[in-house]
Image (cartoon, rainbow, N blue to C red; front, side):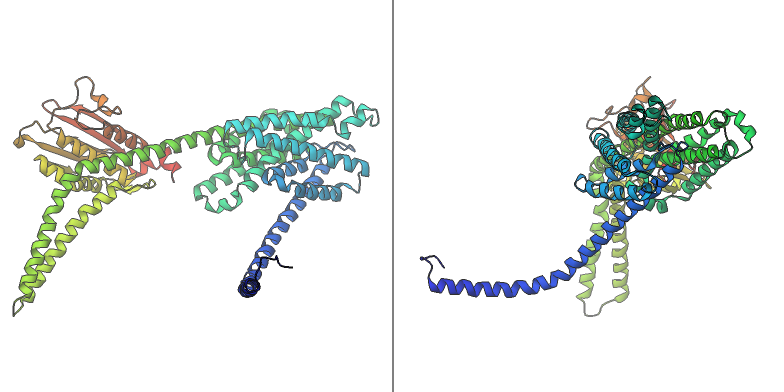
Length: 593
């Protein structure tokens, strides 16, 4: 029933509105439903495929662990299935961990049930799940996600958890508890504890990092983006490891008496850590572990002279000795690269701010330079209008006027284009450059300043100059700063004596030198290098950053920039840049390409 205060006409209006609303919503639901069902189906397929991949990888890892067991014991040399479980937990939101546990439990049953009692299966599944969830929680809290091993902090925390948590976990597993109770007399409790702990330590140190850096960060998709040089390096590293592995673990048994062969693994491992980062380092260590395992299983290599238990222990300690240090080296290198990238970005932003400030200082002179072509355009346009008002129009004269307007417009556009190029902000773009073109662009951009200063510019550019390798905007900034500083330093010099000399010539086979010489006040006596200190300036309204940033730019290009006083008057600045071939070997240029 409706409330007593509701009128019948209100009820009819509301019912009528509900009918219209239903008629409007039903087509909308019909239009949305197919798309919603399709999106849901796509998500379900993706979700199911991920579950299937986890199921397959865990099953294969468990089977591989069974293949590396101690004689007939349940203790494996390495249990990679726990590494798969840990990686899956770290890459999955905690709200969906139950899916990971259910999937890995089913895979564990499928891999172990033919040979393992039911009570032991339940114990293993519960223990592994509890152990790896504890490790995942600790890593999430203290190491942070994503776990990319690109910092020393992450590597240290991961190594500490990988060494500590398995030792605690081993105390609750049947492989230790049953010998402790005398139910499995094959091993002493101490030996069982050590073997169980090391089995999981190795899995966490060697297998899990490979899964995390490749599976977690999408590096498999980024392989296609690697440069040819990186691919060649990666192939060379793997071939080097394979050659050393074949010599140390695949040759005649006599090589077992030469344990020093193991040291030959370190050069390619260090190479991988330095050049390929954490992903290459983790993969290379995993390859070494695989080669040493296969060789020892065939009774080849430095570890076969001892008993079987000592062989396995020696292998495990060898893996622990090479894994964390190589990962740590890769993290140190990556941290250094990140710091260099941050400094490069800050230097680029500061250089852009300085260019904008320089453009502001040049604005008056640039306005003067633009006034002439704009005035000429206006005058020619007025003349053309006057001609068109005549009864008989001289088309040849109008065409000549239009050509003058086009030429003046192009001159004004060139001024604005050079200014836009000078102040634009963007990523560094290293490319082969002609130094003489950079010098001419700098003179064109600073032409108005040169004219207003009453300075005569003399240029001397040798022919056949080799190209340099650098960023055109940054080198243009350096040259404009040197030209403008030279002009401003001659404000006290009599106008007839104001001259700026620019000389460009090869310094040797691998360097090109640009000399900018003025006849101004010169540099501070005994402190010529102080002008390159940040915020040091001799100008009344100067920032004191132009030369400091200029030197940092030149240094980043593998060159040098310095100044010295002339014997008579003024100063000369030397800009030395490596040629394209020489800078191809420069570390900075190589990293950005």
